[in-house]
Image 1 (cartoon, rainbow, N blue to C red):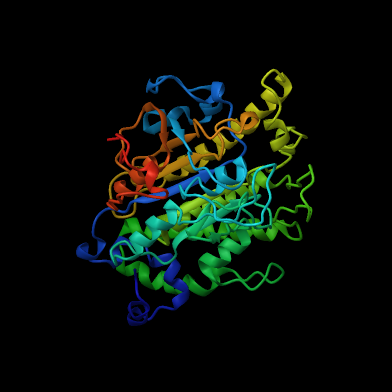
Image 2 (cartoon, rainbow, N blue to C red):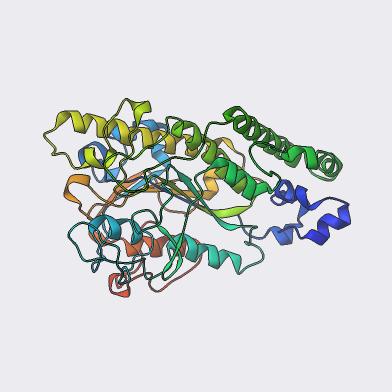
Length: 434
């Protein structure tokens, strides 16, 4: 990381730090260390349509309908069929599906009631993203300003095991930020409020002009791209005016959960900010959570009026519900394709290739299938070459605990854990993904 005394020596303000922290020209070769390696975990709720999602095991020659938006990336995709969330104990299927997804450990006893199952509390351990954050932050060569960033899209303003997948430790859920204004403010810390939006660039333009003489052409281009994105984000927020960018929801949880029609706009803004933050090395670990488990989002931009959770519980013979669920899940795949394309289009700062060559993106869900509440065949789709896994494949692990995949992720970062989450599901070690 660039320290504040370094900025002082150059005569720059602290406000310019977010624009400079990831520029290779400002580091010596020794300080750069090994290649940057990143992880993004994207979550969408309420299960998938297995017949429209899973291909046959083996080489990925043809994708099923849900994944058609990702067709151009199939050689850089890895599908992990047959992974099961085996965590038992208190809490209903959605609670354990959501809060045990990245932790791989049981829920604590508590008084949150779900369905007809026993009540429960928060997860009893850290999530894999936070485990890797802590691992990277211990080394100055991989340390970043934020360690991790948690993005949300249409995540309701409530806190329970259905809404949280990220945990800093036992009984320590981490809330995502689902308002792009708040995330922009967190990243740059320059804006006071929406009504009197102060441009970030106004305070740093002179600093960036001064530093441009000391950096490479590649880094000059990176700063230019960075400034253009921030300017575009500011203009988007200004145009929003009095339009609320947050997603309102009734205080109670009836069958109607309000989701704004500008959710697609917010989704793209959040992904732009995510890629921007990683390109400038503000973080190497991020999560992107869409909505929540048991969420009843009404996706009117897809001409779907029914709540998502309600549709996911309809029987397979309900062709109308199946078609709408196909529409919903294909939209999620399209959002993933946008994120992956952004990474692919962004040159890797200080290295060959694009950011996608150094990033592992995972798309997952709390259920394998909504109307059965199964924790078998949990969707795990990997895109990108950051982990060094062999891509262009679909594996069938035939019921292997998903803890083993979480361990595999840790090992891909050089964090050779002997177990993760509940030890009893880690005995067979990491998955053969090389």
